[in-house]
Amino acid sequence: MTNSKLRYTLLLVFASLLLVPLATPLLASVSATSLTFTRAPPGYNPQTGAFTMDSQLTDDNSINGGRVCVMFDYFIFNAQAGQTLQAQVQSAGKPVSYIILNSPSGLYRFQNSNCGYGNWGPVEAFTSPTTITWVAPAEGQYVIILLTNGFYGGQVFFTPQ
Image 1 (spheres, rainbow, N blue to C red):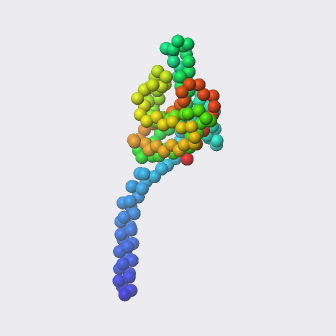
Image 2: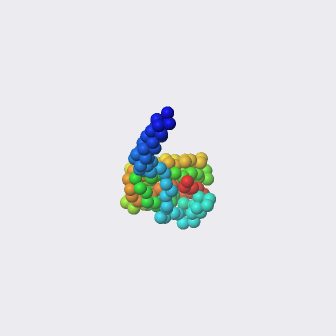
């Protein structure tokens, strides 16, 4: 009896030693890790997540000329393939949207677009507290742009988790 229990225990230990190293890379590739932002909006408070959108796109073709059609600001970060960006976002009442693009090329195209019009992929809008969960498709530099139509002088809250 004792001999079979010892064999069974040794077999379980041996199997565990083989399976754990095989499973570890799979677990590491899907686990979320925190991202470091290489650029945040001016006046961004990392403790509260509060900031005021500082940049704007204007419609130079309008009759009144130079009307603000989009207020925006952005965060730049590097990510590995499979790395997750998770954050809480909230506006102070006006609908705010976000898009995530490759940077710097996507950011350049957005900043030089006609009032933010373009093929940006999914643009998600929110007014109440919302959770953003995004997984990097490939290693690279990305930008999350928070934007709203027209002028907006209120605060936006962006709190990465």
